[in-house]
Each structure stands twice: as structure tokens, then as C-alpha cells.
Picture 1 (cartoon, rainbow, N blue to C red):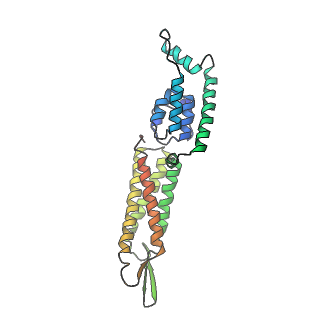
Picture 2 (tube, rainbow, N blue to C red; picture 1 turned 180 degrees about the horizontal axis):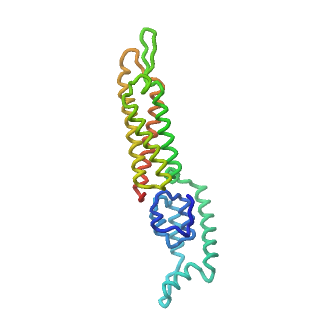
Picture 3 (cartoon, helix red, strand yellow; picture 1 turned 45 degrees about the horizontal axis):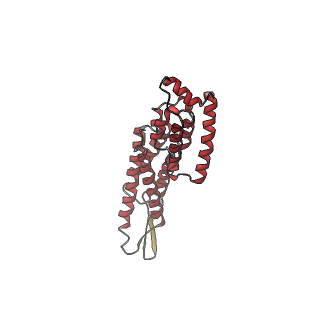
Length: 248
């Protein structure tokens, strides 16, 4: 995400799409936003520990000092210029951050990345739609074989509705990414993706009820489509969960 840390406000940090790297950049030069960074859902344990350590390093101001003078001394650290101090903090934190990320890269933080969420949801929706054209049921009687699919022979009566929900989920996910986490688009993309995925899975189970009949069996497309639909459900749920710990 492109931004200037000096221009970020506490309200801006209510956006859950700031990544761990973004929060590191902000915390290294904006001690006034420590509380907002700590409340952010992507604030990982190492960053929180670093912020608390920096706070404890700042001694309480003497009684005769004004709040402004005390803050200046805390940030300047014994006469250094604020710019030099900021650079020192940024360099120290960069080294700590790099070392901690090499030791353990939090998978949860990667999953919350807006690029991964948007790309995963779009890809799973597209693959689910493509999978609907695969043969999902095979009938073999008297040496004759015929395959059936959602659109080829009409056994999936909900095909057009699934298409509408999947396309809507893709469009809303893209708009949500462009709008940087607008709440209504997060909800829209997640809900339409869930509905589309559930309809596909329901139809597969419904079609699978014919397998007990003589000569009837599921085709490879049923299994592929089921996997794609489950992926759509997973990414849709993750989309909605971004609203849990922060405002969109």
C-alpha cells in the first residue's frame, strides 16, 4: 500500500488492509500512533513488544518540565535531532523486524493480505465457474455412455444463479480492493461468494444422489468443481473475517 507515514492519522489505521510491513514503517516514525498500531488486527507480537519497549525507554518527565518539553526530550534522546532519532529507530526496528520474520513468518498475517484475499477469491470464483462446464455425472447403459453437466444437459438447474453470484463476488472483490476495504463491498463480496459456493456444493450432493442407480457414476468434473467451490467458500469467509477486528 502506497502512503506517507507522516500523513497517516489514527482514523486511517482503522483500515484493516495495512500490512505488517506498513505498520512497521508507521511505528518507526510515528510514536504518537503507537496505540492505533497496537489495536490494528495486523499488529503481530514482535511489533507490539518493540512498541512497549520503546515506551518504557522514555523516562517520565520531571515535575518542572512542561508536557511539550518532556515529549521533545523523550523523542530527541539526549540532544539528538528528531530526524536522526527517527532514522535510528527505523534502522533498529528494521533489523529486529528482518530477524524475526526470518525466524517465523506469521501465516495468519499473510492470509490477511488484501492482495492474497482478493486474488484468491477471484481465482476460486473463476475456477468454480469453469468447473461448471465439466461433466459431473456419467451414465452408461447397454454400452452407451453419456455425460451430464450444469449447462450441457441442464441437470444443474441453478447454473444461471450460481453464475450471477460468482460474477457479483468477483466484481465486488475488485471494487473493495480499489476502495481499500469499504465495508459494504467486503460484505457484498463475501456473502455472494458464500451463496454461490453453497449452491454449487448443494447441487453436487443432489446430483450425487443418483449414483446409486444402475450405470450412474460421478465424473471427474464433480470432484474438481467441489474443490473449487470449497475454495470459494473459504476465501469468502476470510473476506468477512476482515471486519471482525477492525472497521472497513
